[in-house]
Length: 239
Image (cartoon, rainbow, N blue to C red):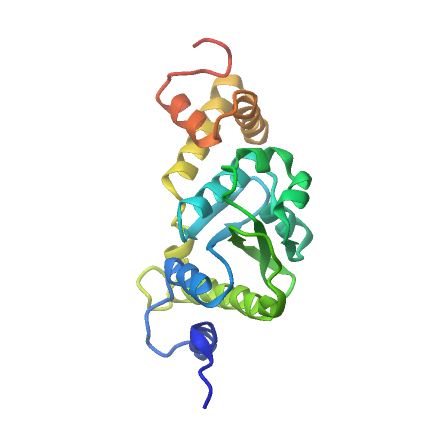
């Protein structure tokens, strides 16, 4: 009998549901994607809308920066895939990255040759996005079906974690995933709240101001957020 591969086995395990095993961790899913697909890195994000999103897991530093930049700038394959509910397949990053100029400028030269964003959806609901990247350009080719299986597997894992709850016993919440916002993302939300309170503007406008400040100074949003929390800078010009 042919080996179905780790992705297929994980998929079957999640479909079985209630088999008593622990929830599949986001880190395990990212590692499996890298090992089973012709890619160099992976990241999983959960999203409510373009502003409210969190990184569940990343495979490496490049994937982590990809997520931070998209979160901070509000543009990139991940955002487009979530918004359109369709896969975004940028096989030749050098030519296709012009669709997201600010995001592309923030990436280290030569770190990305291709990027693929696959929506995590069940019915009419989109839970987030699976981001995959390659250091060399090139399409997924015949592995696209496996990548779509990976996205479905990640979706099942998110739902499985939600059903099991924080203790893995089927209570509520899915904290294994939804509470795994990175420290940077938590700081961005905290800084957004501070700006909102200090300037008397809605959270949405506060986040736009935070993002614009970072963009104008060629910095990551997370870096600016840390400075705002530490009171090293103020967006009203008082420091």
